Length: 298
Image (cartoon, rainbow, N blue to C red):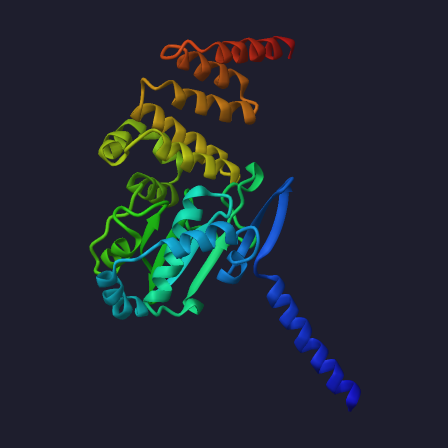
């Protein structure tokens, strides 16, 4: 009997250990540059070295009390997912503020799930547990608000006004998220596919023109797709970017770089050459020469 009791205790302790280990996992892919990955908690963020920026920015921030008073009532109906990078400057600034707003609003932290994503090229803005999948996490931090299991809205990268005012606008049903172009294009991509976007590129670009603030919006989104092994989708999005910003060298270089990684040398040369029409860059000229040499050798 005693053996059975000890065995049960062992199982309970093992389960607790495994649960604890599933949170606040730290990796160090670069020397002296650790980061948290996967599900984390404010306890993890209050540990060294993350507490240096977390505690400082938490203490320094004073939320608007009127907004807090309103959130105390309205926010209780929601659950929240927060995607962040412990390596990301925007996350370091906004996440401590977010925790302070939640705590001042008496929001139960067990209704908040915080996920730390990777910065490495192989798993760019991904979580090892797959929590990012299907959620279009292209910039961090991203705060996703759910009600009755359905996403209501999200704050992406930084607030439009302040975090508490943006949160109040969300629960009031009066909020338009940043990077609307990415949300709309991602919706088309998921419902109709990359081939549809390719065939209707000019028409789609025309529809999105007023929703894109700068050439980096779709470029970042495409990078996330590419490193999530959705390479054709990434190429399609970058092609749309060249239609939206036809006189910007950067969009052609970005597209060419992806073709290089996919070993499509002829396409890479084509887009590098196009970029030279707007920026006679010596480095790009050298890349073209190098690619032509390898093509001829092949």
